[in-house]
Length: 132
Image (cartoon, rainbow, N blue to C red; front, side, top):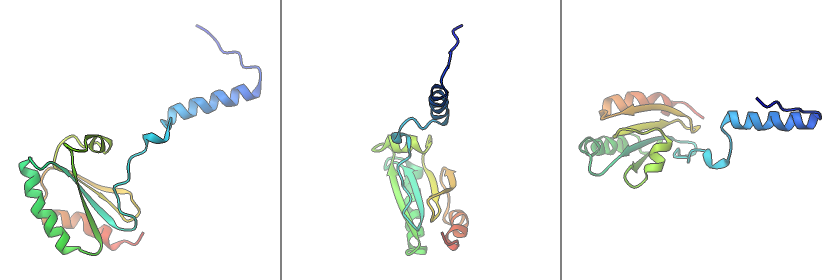
């Protein structure tokens, strides 16, 4: 087994910085997630596909949500077949998947599968009422 002989304090600092950088997983700026949230608004992101039956059912739910909350909710649809890397970045493994970001851009809700208007409204409403 080889041992490192560090004779200068600068070597210790550089080695410690390298270890911390590696451990934190911050090796580059390309590791960050793309921002899907709208600044200052609650954002509902639907991950799905145009060929998926439950995703097609979610279209009606999303349309209803647009009508209920036209001013304070942004709805974004991500087609996982066209944007697989974005889906992978957010840990989407099954569709449909809904992710909600609050007005500050923090992920506050994650659901897999079909969800009705009533349940989705219950999940989103507390965040619509909060100010960033």
